[in-house]
Image (cartoon, rainbow over all chains, first blue to last red; front, side, top):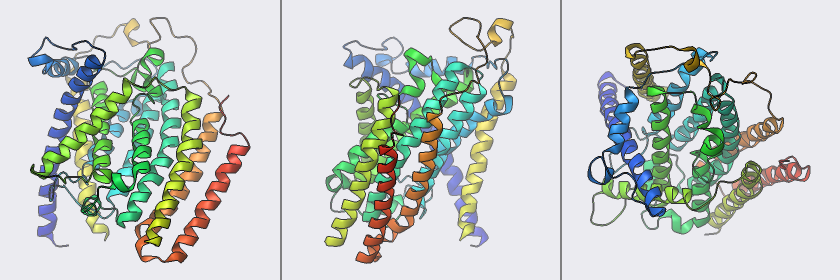
Length: 322
Length: 118
């Protein structure tokens, strides 16, 4: 590879990074507002109404306040680990955007290892949660992080195997190729079971209700980030909401045909599908009660993993048959 | 070609620098008023009892062990999956046997009661 191509690559990456950071911030501001509004309307109350039209700039006010908050480092925290944890949780989030195709050509870098890259970096989140929880010297944080690690690792296996059945049908790890392969049918039609498995695992991986034990507010205060304040807390919060965007974007790419759709431009369809998925995940939160920890673990190992294996073998068998 | 991943590495570098500077700036610019009460770890407003880094149940280690075993096996499936279209029935049969071995392992673990959480 010569220097000029390399240079243009770098420019593309930097422009992409600026775009991603803008997207991440606007997305988080919007999602927090959306979450509060969805929650409110499901419970037949109006939600935030005071700041702006229907409370639409409430989150901006909250964010400004958050930025001005003091950073408290409690006694006896493991300082290097405590400081590193917010960085480690945010790194995989921004890296995942490298390979997500928003529209034809609108991808920072289409790589032939796309799916692997996202899945392997998503695994880093577990590490960050463990770092945050263990270093905080807080009992709630330790409990939250241990639960979170057990949960994330348990749901990662069915997730990997489910995504595998999509890879089988496409024969490529590149997300662009996956969208291109859905020319005729969206994969949700061919792989309905995989879609259900994926959504279940994705909800668990992002620590959303009904699988929100790591940060169960009513028992663990805030879970692994109890001791974080100010900008550090903001990074955890941003990472959480951006992770929601990423799993929904992946669901869109794997099952809902990515940017495909009539009339509107590709990126518009992509965002419509992503936010529809996010709405679905938010809806779960106000529909299902939180599961117990033993239910959570046995559900992953006894139901999801056998189903995921069955789906994989069935896909492979049918592909060889036809 | 490994050179293809150099821009990714650079991107990682920029990202780490960016987040690091956000945290560092807010650490340096923010005003700090320490009080002994503010610096104790939160425990419902009470003085914390004992150390937070306590021992936890061995079941979590068991789950972690299963994870490592199954995760590595899932990774073995990935290279197979990506070239599956070019493989014939032989490729299918081979991986069916591999998955069968995995399922036997899961059934064994299940039968031993290691998945029960009591």
